[in-house]
Image (cartoon, rainbow, N blue to C red; front, top):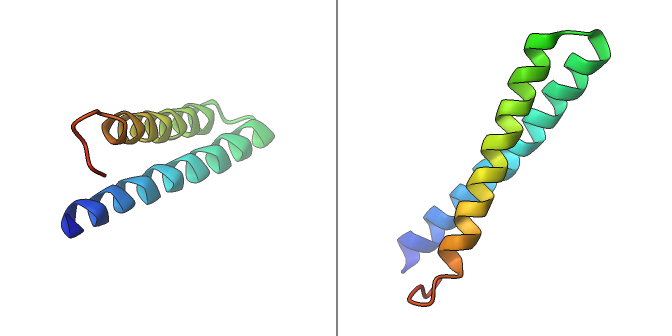
Amino acid sequence: MEGNTKALLANKLIAIGLLLIGFLIFASGYRYGSPSSIMVGCLLFAIGIILLIIKIARRNKPDSVA
């Protein structure tokens, strides 16, 4: 149980970090007109959202305790 809780917390922190970094890269790419930075920022942001959705779906399973 303890290891599972730490893994879920780590996944949440990684997802939030990816959201933040992705947004910052996207914003700087938009500001300076860099299409590659915009794409990388969008990709990292999307990965962060997907990880959060997976974590929420895993938490809300009927047989899940965490």
